[in-house]
Each structure stands twice: as structure tokens, then as C-alpha cells.
Amino acid sequence: MANIKSAIKRVEIAERNRLHNKSYKSAVKTLTKRYLTAVSEYAAHPTPELGQQVKDRMAAAYSKIDKAVKRGVLHPHNGARKKSTLARALKREEAKISAPVDA
Image (cartoon, rainbow, N blue to C red; front, side, top):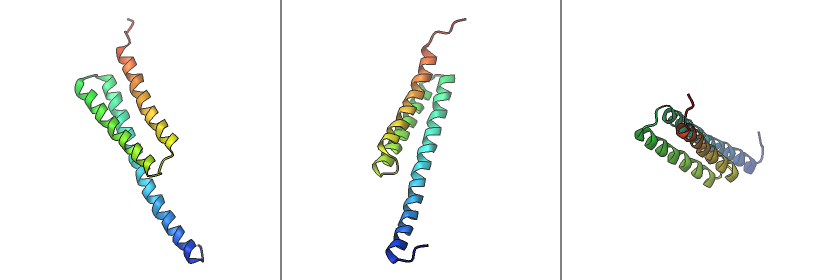
């Protein structure tokens, strides 16, 4: 443990920031999982209702990622990579849906 008063304060602030950042990262992971689950359900049974649910969850995940980047929890490139992964997952499933099935 630090002995100098300013160093002690920095340790306390770092711990507080770590916990705050942890909650943001956890929320990003949770929203990402919910989105990917919705995408897989939509791919299995494409309906307009599930399509809207996918769009809503994508918007929520994008929003939380953008806020985490804005607050410095995530690096901008990391946020862009996460958003790209989400978009790519949907594109991949939509391609499977629209591709003709050879019998």
C-alpha cells in the first residue's frame, strides 16, 4: 500500500474507476449476447417481429458500445471492432436465409 497521501488517493480513484469500467464492459457483453441470441432465433424462424427485435437489440448494443467509447472505457478501435462483429453476424445469417437451398 502507498504511504504518500496523493498516492493513496490515486489508488482509491483507480479502484473506483475500475469498478465503473467493469460495469460498462459487462453491460456491453450482456447486450451483445442478447443481440446474437436474437439473430440466431431470427435465422431459425425469420418473422417480421423477430426482425424488429433484432434491430432493437442491435441499436441498444451499438448505443452502449458508443457510450463506453465516449467515456474512455473502450478504445475507439475496440468499439468499432465490436460493432463490426455484430453487423457481420447479422449479414451472415441473412445470407443463409436468402440463399437458395439445394435439395
